[in-house]
Amino acid sequence: MNETPRANRLHIGLFGKRNAGKSSLINSMTNQEIALVSETKGTTTDPVYKSMEILPLGPVVVIDTAGIDDTGELGKLRIKKTIGVLEKTDLAIMVVDATDKNVDSEKKILKTIKAKGIPVIGVLNKIDLKENDSKYYEAELGLNFISVSAKTKEGIENLKEKIAKYSKDIDYEEPSIIGDLVNRWDVIVHVTPIDEAAPKGRLILPQVQTIRDVLDYNGINIVVQDTELKETINMFRDKIKIVVTDSQAFGKIRDIVPKDIYLTSYSILYARYKGDLVELVKGAKAIKSLKNNDTILISESCTHHRQKGDIGRDKIPKFLEELSNKKLNFKWSSGTTIPEDLSMYKMIVHCGGCMINRKQMISRINKAKNNNIPIVNYGVFLGFKFNVLDRALELFPEAKRIWND
Image (tube, rainbow, N blue to C red; front, side, top):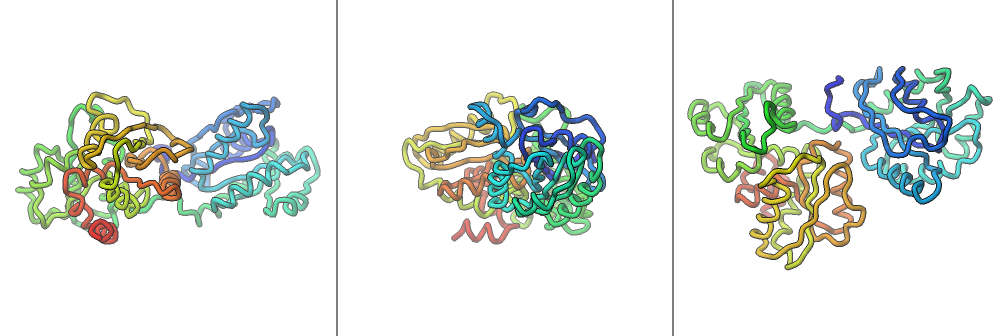
Protein backbone atom coordinates (compact mmCIF):
# COMPACT_ATOMS: atom_id res chain seq x y z
CA MET A 1 0.00 0.00 0.00
CA ASN A 2 2.88 2.37 0.68
CA GLU A 3 3.82 2.07 -3.00
CA THR A 4 0.39 3.26 -4.15
CA PRO A 5 0.95 6.36 -6.31
CA ARG A 6 -0.23 9.59 -4.71
CA ALA A 7 -2.63 10.25 -7.58
CA ASN A 8 -4.51 7.01 -6.77
CA ARG A 9 -5.03 7.73 -3.07
CA LEU A 10 -7.99 9.28 -1.26
CA HIS A 11 -7.07 12.95 -0.71
CA ILE A 12 -8.16 14.22 2.72
CA GLY A 13 -7.84 17.97 3.30
CA LEU A 14 -7.78 19.45 6.81
CA PHE A 15 -9.11 23.00 7.10
CA GLY A 16 -9.47 25.33 10.06
CA LYS A 17 -8.02 28.32 11.86
CA ARG A 18 -4.44 28.70 12.96
CA ASN A 19 -3.82 26.63 16.09
CA ALA A 20 -7.07 24.72 15.71
CA GLY A 21 -4.91 21.60 15.94
CA LYS A 22 -4.86 20.38 12.33
CA SER A 23 -1.24 19.23 12.46
CA SER A 24 -1.70 17.65 15.89
CA LEU A 25 -4.73 15.82 14.57
CA ILE A 26 -2.66 14.32 11.73
CA ASN A 27 -0.08 13.10 14.25
CA SER A 28 -2.79 11.53 16.42
CA MET A 29 -4.48 9.82 13.48
CA THR A 30 -1.22 8.25 12.33
CA ASN A 31 0.42 7.67 15.72
CA GLN A 32 3.49 9.40 14.30
CA GLU A 33 5.14 12.80 14.62
CA ILE A 34 4.56 13.56 10.94
CA ALA A 35 3.40 17.17 11.02
CA LEU A 36 5.27 20.05 12.67
CA VAL A 37 3.41 21.26 15.76
CA SER A 38 3.93 24.49 17.66
CA GLU A 39 2.02 26.83 19.95
CA THR A 40 2.98 29.64 17.59
CA LYS A 41 0.17 30.57 15.22
CA GLY A 42 0.78 29.96 11.53
CA THR A 43 3.34 27.14 11.83
CA THR A 44 1.92 25.56 8.67
CA THR A 45 2.41 28.15 5.95
CA ASP A 46 1.92 26.16 2.73
CA PRO A 47 -0.17 23.05 2.05
CA VAL A 48 1.79 19.97 3.12
CA TYR A 49 1.00 16.64 1.48
CA LYS A 50 1.57 13.45 3.47
CA SER A 51 1.20 10.07 1.76
CA MET A 52 0.42 7.53 4.44
CA GLU A 53 -1.64 4.53 5.44
CA ILE A 54 -4.42 4.98 7.97
CA LEU A 55 -6.27 1.90 9.15
CA PRO A 56 -9.00 1.04 8.36
CA LEU A 57 -8.77 3.41 5.38
CA GLY A 58 -5.65 2.16 3.62
CA PRO A 59 -3.40 4.43 1.52
CA VAL A 60 -4.38 8.12 1.64
CA VAL A 61 -2.92 11.56 1.13
CA VAL A 62 -3.54 13.90 4.06
CA ILE A 63 -3.22 17.60 3.24
CA ASP A 64 -2.31 19.94 6.09
CA THR A 65 -3.21 23.54 5.25
CA ALA A 66 -2.50 27.03 6.52
CA GLY A 67 -5.00 28.68 8.85
CA ILE A 68 -8.08 30.18 7.19
CA ASP A 69 -7.84 33.15 9.56
CA ASP A 70 -4.28 34.11 8.57
CA THR A 71 -3.56 37.83 8.41
CA GLY A 72 -1.53 40.33 6.40
CA GLU A 73 -0.48 40.18 2.76
CA LEU A 74 1.32 36.86 3.22
CA GLY A 75 -1.70 35.56 5.09
CA LYS A 76 -3.92 36.31 2.12
CA LEU A 77 -1.59 34.35 -0.14
CA ARG A 78 -1.59 31.41 2.28
CA ILE A 79 -5.39 31.40 2.44
CA LYS A 80 -5.48 31.46 -1.35
CA LYS A 81 -3.28 28.36 -1.44
CA THR A 82 -5.49 26.70 1.14
CA ILE A 83 -8.56 27.34 -1.03
CA GLY A 84 -6.65 25.92 -3.99
CA VAL A 85 -6.26 22.61 -2.15
CA LEU A 86 -10.01 22.06 -2.62
CA GLU A 87 -9.38 21.38 -6.32
CA LYS A 88 -7.84 18.03 -5.38
CA THR A 89 -9.65 17.27 -2.09
CA ASP A 90 -11.90 14.20 -2.04
CA LEU A 91 -12.93 14.56 1.61
CA ALA A 92 -12.66 17.72 3.74
CA ILE A 93 -12.23 17.76 7.52
CA MET A 94 -13.25 21.00 9.19
CA VAL A 95 -11.24 21.31 12.40
CA VAL A 96 -12.72 23.67 15.00
CA ASP A 97 -11.10 24.73 18.28
CA ALA A 98 -13.45 23.90 21.19
CA THR A 99 -12.12 26.95 23.09
CA ASP A 100 -13.08 29.40 20.31
CA LYS A 101 -16.75 30.37 19.81
CA ASN A 102 -16.11 32.64 16.81
CA VAL A 103 -16.75 30.56 13.68
CA ASP A 104 -16.99 33.29 11.02
CA SER A 105 -13.90 32.00 9.19
CA GLU A 106 -15.23 28.45 9.26
CA LYS A 107 -18.57 29.57 7.83
CA LYS A 108 -16.83 31.22 4.90
CA ILE A 109 -14.70 28.28 3.82
CA LEU A 110 -17.47 25.79 4.57
CA LYS A 111 -19.62 27.60 2.02
CA THR A 112 -16.87 27.17 -0.58
CA ILE A 113 -16.41 23.49 0.28
CA LYS A 114 -20.11 22.74 -0.06
CA ALA A 115 -20.35 24.72 -3.32
CA LYS A 116 -17.75 22.35 -4.78
CA GLY A 117 -19.75 19.33 -3.66
CA ILE A 118 -16.99 18.01 -1.40
CA PRO A 119 -18.18 15.87 1.53
CA VAL A 120 -17.08 17.34 4.83
CA ILE A 121 -16.67 15.99 8.36
CA GLY A 122 -16.72 18.36 11.34
CA VAL A 123 -14.13 17.79 14.06
CA LEU A 124 -14.31 19.62 17.39
CA ASN A 125 -10.77 19.51 18.76
CA LYS A 126 -9.28 20.31 22.18
CA ILE A 127 -12.14 18.88 24.25
CA ASP A 128 -9.50 18.18 26.89
CA LEU A 129 -9.34 21.95 27.48
CA LYS A 130 -13.04 22.75 27.61
CA GLU A 131 -16.32 20.98 28.24
CA ASN A 132 -17.69 19.47 25.03
CA ASP A 133 -20.17 21.90 23.44
CA SER A 134 -20.58 20.33 20.00
CA LYS A 135 -24.27 21.31 19.81
CA TYR A 136 -23.30 24.98 19.62
CA TYR A 137 -20.97 24.42 16.67
CA GLU A 138 -23.42 22.13 14.92
CA ALA A 139 -26.09 24.82 15.14
CA GLU A 140 -23.72 27.56 13.95
CA LEU A 141 -22.21 25.63 11.03
CA GLY A 142 -24.98 23.19 10.10
CA LEU A 143 -22.52 20.34 10.38
CA ASN A 144 -22.37 17.22 12.53
CA PHE A 145 -19.24 17.12 14.69
CA ILE A 146 -17.05 14.41 16.11
CA SER A 147 -15.48 15.54 19.37
CA VAL A 148 -11.79 14.70 19.81
CA SER A 149 -8.64 15.61 21.63
CA ALA A 150 -5.57 15.40 19.47
CA LYS A 151 -3.53 15.63 22.69
CA THR A 152 -5.12 12.75 24.62
CA LYS A 153 -6.35 10.92 21.46
CA GLU A 154 -9.89 10.77 22.82
CA GLY A 155 -12.32 10.30 19.92
CA ILE A 156 -9.57 9.68 17.31
CA GLU A 157 -10.70 6.11 16.56
CA ASN A 158 -14.28 7.34 16.08
CA LEU A 159 -12.99 9.93 13.63
CA LYS A 160 -11.04 7.33 11.62
CA GLU A 161 -14.10 5.08 11.46
CA LYS A 162 -16.20 8.05 10.28
CA ILE A 163 -13.66 8.86 7.56
CA ALA A 164 -13.65 5.21 6.46
CA LYS A 165 -17.45 5.22 6.27
CA TYR A 166 -17.50 8.42 4.20
CA SER A 167 -14.77 7.19 1.87
CA LYS A 168 -16.87 4.22 0.74
CA ASP A 169 -19.24 6.62 -1.02
CA ILE A 170 -16.54 8.81 -2.58
CA ASP A 171 -15.55 8.14 -6.17
CA TYR A 172 -11.90 8.97 -5.64
CA GLU A 173 -10.43 5.96 -7.41
CA GLU A 174 -10.08 6.40 -11.14
CA PRO A 175 -12.06 4.04 -13.37
CA SER A 176 -10.23 1.22 -15.12
CA ILE A 177 -7.50 2.31 -17.51
CA ILE A 178 -8.03 -0.50 -20.00
CA GLY A 179 -9.36 -3.44 -17.96
CA ASP A 180 -13.00 -2.96 -18.96
CA LEU A 181 -11.89 -3.50 -22.57
CA VAL A 182 -9.96 -6.69 -21.80
CA ASN A 183 -11.26 -10.25 -21.51
CA ARG A 184 -9.40 -13.26 -20.12
CA TRP A 185 -6.59 -14.37 -22.47
CA ASP A 186 -6.76 -11.21 -24.61
CA VAL A 187 -3.27 -10.25 -25.78
CA ILE A 188 -2.37 -6.57 -25.40
CA VAL A 189 0.81 -5.35 -27.09
CA HIS A 190 2.52 -2.35 -25.48
CA VAL A 191 4.80 -0.25 -27.69
CA THR A 192 7.33 1.50 -25.46
CA PRO A 193 10.03 3.26 -27.49
CA ILE A 194 13.41 3.46 -25.75
CA ASP A 195 14.80 6.84 -26.78
CA GLU A 196 16.46 9.83 -25.14
CA ALA A 197 13.21 10.81 -23.44
CA ALA A 198 12.71 7.36 -21.86
CA PRO A 199 13.80 7.13 -18.19
CA LYS A 200 16.84 4.93 -17.73
CA GLY A 201 16.15 1.48 -16.34
CA ARG A 202 12.39 1.79 -15.94
CA LEU A 203 9.06 2.39 -17.65
CA ILE A 204 6.97 5.51 -17.14
CA LEU A 205 3.97 5.45 -14.79
CA PRO A 206 1.19 5.24 -17.45
CA GLN A 207 2.92 2.24 -19.04
CA VAL A 208 3.35 0.46 -15.70
CA GLN A 209 -0.21 1.15 -14.57
CA THR A 210 -1.72 0.04 -17.88
CA ILE A 211 0.29 -3.19 -17.85
CA ARG A 212 -0.88 -3.86 -14.29
CA ASP A 213 -4.50 -3.16 -15.25
CA VAL A 214 -4.31 -5.78 -18.00
CA LEU A 215 -2.95 -8.29 -15.48
CA ASP A 216 -5.76 -7.48 -13.04
CA TYR A 217 -8.27 -8.46 -15.73
CA ASN A 218 -6.42 -11.68 -16.66
CA GLY A 219 -5.15 -10.41 -19.98
CA ILE A 220 -1.72 -11.13 -21.46
CA ASN A 221 0.87 -8.39 -21.92
CA ILE A 222 3.55 -8.25 -24.58
CA VAL A 223 5.96 -5.30 -24.25
CA VAL A 224 8.10 -4.31 -27.24
CA GLN A 225 9.90 -1.36 -28.76
CA ASP A 226 8.49 0.15 -31.94
CA THR A 227 11.36 -1.43 -33.88
CA GLU A 228 10.18 -4.93 -32.88
CA LEU A 229 6.46 -4.35 -33.39
CA LYS A 230 6.18 -5.68 -36.95
CA GLU A 231 7.81 -9.00 -36.09
CA THR A 232 5.73 -9.27 -32.92
CA ILE A 233 2.52 -8.88 -34.91
CA ASN A 234 3.71 -11.52 -37.38
CA MET A 235 4.30 -13.93 -34.48
CA PHE A 236 1.03 -13.33 -32.61
CA ARG A 237 -1.19 -11.95 -35.39
CA ASP A 238 -4.45 -13.79 -34.57
CA LYS A 239 -4.20 -13.38 -30.81
CA ILE A 240 -3.63 -9.64 -30.46
CA LYS A 241 -6.66 -7.54 -29.52
CA ILE A 242 -5.18 -4.09 -28.80
CA VAL A 243 -1.91 -2.32 -29.49
CA VAL A 244 -1.21 0.50 -27.02
CA THR A 245 1.57 2.89 -27.93
CA ASP A 246 3.33 6.02 -26.81
CA SER A 247 1.40 8.72 -28.67
CA GLN A 248 4.57 10.08 -30.26
CA ALA A 249 5.05 6.75 -32.06
CA PHE A 250 1.67 6.92 -33.81
CA GLY A 251 3.30 8.10 -37.03
CA LYS A 252 5.81 5.21 -37.02
CA ILE A 253 3.45 2.35 -36.29
CA ARG A 254 0.01 3.29 -37.63
CA ASP A 255 0.61 1.42 -40.91
CA ILE A 256 2.22 -1.56 -39.19
CA VAL A 257 -0.83 -2.45 -37.10
CA PRO A 258 -3.51 -4.28 -39.19
CA LYS A 259 -6.91 -2.62 -39.33
CA ASP A 260 -8.60 -5.46 -37.47
CA ILE A 261 -6.43 -4.86 -34.40
CA TYR A 262 -7.41 -1.94 -32.17
CA LEU A 263 -4.79 0.80 -31.92
CA THR A 264 -4.72 3.49 -29.23
CA SER A 265 -2.23 5.23 -26.93
CA TYR A 266 -1.50 5.53 -23.23
CA SER A 267 -2.39 9.20 -23.25
CA ILE A 268 -5.75 8.55 -24.91
CA LEU A 269 -6.46 5.87 -22.31
CA TYR A 270 -5.51 8.44 -19.66
CA ALA A 271 -7.82 11.01 -21.23
CA ARG A 272 -10.65 8.75 -20.13
CA TYR A 273 -9.01 7.38 -16.97
CA LYS A 274 -8.07 10.75 -15.50
CA GLY A 275 -10.44 13.16 -17.17
CA ASP A 276 -13.15 13.52 -19.79
CA LEU A 277 -12.25 11.97 -23.16
CA VAL A 278 -15.27 13.44 -24.95
CA GLU A 279 -14.43 16.98 -23.85
CA LEU A 280 -10.79 16.54 -24.88
CA VAL A 281 -11.86 15.28 -28.30
CA LYS A 282 -14.03 18.38 -28.67
CA GLY A 283 -10.90 20.39 -27.92
CA ALA A 284 -9.06 18.76 -30.83
CA LYS A 285 -11.86 19.77 -33.17
CA ALA A 286 -11.26 23.42 -32.26
CA ILE A 287 -7.68 23.43 -33.58
CA LYS A 288 -8.76 24.45 -37.06
CA SER A 289 -10.56 27.48 -35.58
CA LEU A 290 -7.42 29.07 -34.13
CA LYS A 291 -6.41 32.49 -35.43
CA ASN A 292 -3.08 34.24 -35.91
CA ASN A 293 -1.46 35.39 -32.65
CA ASP A 294 -3.81 33.35 -30.45
CA THR A 295 -2.14 32.41 -27.16
CA ILE A 296 -1.97 28.72 -26.25
CA LEU A 297 -1.32 27.32 -22.77
CA ILE A 298 0.67 24.08 -22.68
CA SER A 299 0.26 22.56 -19.25
CA GLU A 300 2.04 19.63 -17.63
CA SER A 301 1.32 18.18 -14.20
CA CYS A 302 4.94 17.22 -13.51
CA THR A 303 8.22 19.13 -13.52
CA HIS A 304 10.49 16.73 -15.40
CA HIS A 305 13.85 17.79 -16.83
CA ARG A 306 13.29 18.95 -20.39
CA GLN A 307 15.66 17.89 -23.14
CA LYS A 308 16.06 19.10 -26.69
CA GLY A 309 13.02 17.99 -28.68
CA ASP A 310 10.78 17.94 -25.58
CA ILE A 311 7.17 17.13 -26.45
CA GLY A 312 5.67 20.08 -24.58
CA ARG A 313 8.29 22.75 -25.27
CA ASP A 314 9.26 21.93 -28.83
CA LYS A 315 7.10 19.41 -30.67
CA ILE A 316 3.56 20.44 -29.75
CA PRO A 317 4.06 24.15 -30.58
CA LYS A 318 5.50 23.16 -33.96
CA PHE A 319 2.74 20.64 -34.68
CA LEU A 320 -0.01 23.03 -33.56
CA GLU A 321 1.14 25.78 -35.90
CA GLU A 322 1.32 23.25 -38.74
CA LEU A 323 -2.19 21.92 -38.10
CA SER A 324 -3.80 25.33 -37.64
CA ASN A 325 -1.69 27.00 -40.34
CA LYS A 326 -1.41 29.99 -38.00
CA LYS A 327 1.35 31.83 -36.15
CA LEU A 328 0.64 31.28 -32.46
CA ASN A 329 1.95 32.45 -29.10
CA PHE A 330 2.75 29.89 -26.41
CA LYS A 331 2.95 29.91 -22.64
CA TRP A 332 3.68 27.01 -20.32
CA SER A 333 2.70 25.86 -16.84
CA SER A 334 3.94 22.86 -14.88
CA GLY A 335 3.35 21.20 -11.55
CA THR A 336 0.21 21.12 -9.45
CA THR A 337 -1.31 24.44 -10.53
CA ILE A 338 -2.44 26.17 -13.69
CA PRO A 339 -2.90 29.94 -14.12
CA GLU A 340 -5.85 31.25 -12.16
CA ASP A 341 -6.80 33.67 -14.95
CA LEU A 342 -7.31 31.81 -18.23
CA SER A 343 -8.88 34.70 -20.12
CA MET A 344 -5.84 35.27 -22.37
CA TYR A 345 -5.78 31.70 -23.72
CA LYS A 346 -7.60 30.40 -26.79
CA MET A 347 -6.68 26.75 -26.18
CA ILE A 348 -5.11 24.53 -23.53
CA VAL A 349 -3.00 21.52 -24.46
CA HIS A 350 -2.56 19.34 -21.37
CA CYS A 351 -0.39 16.31 -20.62
CA GLY A 352 -1.90 12.97 -19.67
CA GLY A 353 -2.07 14.00 -16.00
CA CYS A 354 -0.50 10.89 -14.50
CA MET A 355 0.91 12.89 -11.55
CA ILE A 356 -2.37 14.43 -10.38
CA ASN A 357 -5.56 12.78 -9.19
CA ARG A 358 -8.69 12.51 -11.30
CA LYS A 359 -10.53 15.15 -9.29
CA GLN A 360 -7.84 17.72 -10.07
CA MET A 361 -7.76 16.84 -13.77
CA ILE A 362 -11.55 17.07 -14.01
CA SER A 363 -11.35 20.41 -12.20
CA ARG A 364 -8.92 21.72 -14.82
CA ILE A 365 -11.11 20.51 -17.67
CA ASN A 366 -14.19 22.10 -16.10
CA LYS A 367 -12.33 25.35 -15.51
CA ALA A 368 -11.44 25.50 -19.20
CA LYS A 369 -14.98 24.54 -20.18
CA ASN A 370 -16.52 27.21 -17.94
CA ASN A 371 -14.27 29.79 -19.61
CA ASN A 372 -15.23 28.53 -23.11
CA ILE A 373 -11.62 27.49 -23.76
CA PRO A 374 -11.07 24.27 -25.76
CA ILE A 375 -8.80 21.80 -23.99
CA VAL A 376 -7.09 18.77 -25.48
CA ASN A 377 -4.53 16.37 -24.05
CA TYR A 378 -1.28 15.24 -25.64
CA GLY A 379 -2.55 11.86 -26.82
CA VAL A 380 -5.71 13.15 -28.49
CA PHE A 381 -3.70 15.98 -30.06
CA LEU A 382 -1.02 13.64 -31.43
CA GLY A 383 -3.67 11.27 -32.72
CA PHE A 384 -5.02 14.20 -34.75
CA LYS A 385 -1.54 15.24 -35.84
CA PHE A 386 -0.67 11.78 -37.18
CA ASN A 387 -4.08 11.31 -38.79
CA VAL A 388 -4.93 8.32 -36.66
CA LEU A 389 -7.39 9.75 -34.11
CA ASP A 390 -10.46 8.27 -35.76
CA ARG A 391 -8.94 4.82 -35.45
CA ALA A 392 -7.54 5.42 -31.97
CA LEU A 393 -11.07 6.19 -30.73
CA GLU A 394 -12.66 2.99 -32.05
CA LEU A 395 -12.63 1.53 -28.54
CA PHE A 396 -14.62 4.53 -27.29
CA PRO A 397 -17.83 4.90 -29.38
CA GLU A 398 -19.12 8.13 -27.78
CA ALA A 399 -15.83 9.96 -28.31
CA LYS A 400 -15.54 8.60 -31.84
CA ARG A 401 -19.05 9.83 -32.62
CA ILE A 402 -18.18 13.31 -31.38
CA TRP A 403 -15.03 13.32 -33.51
CA ASN A 404 -16.90 12.24 -36.65
CA ASP A 405 -19.89 14.50 -36.07
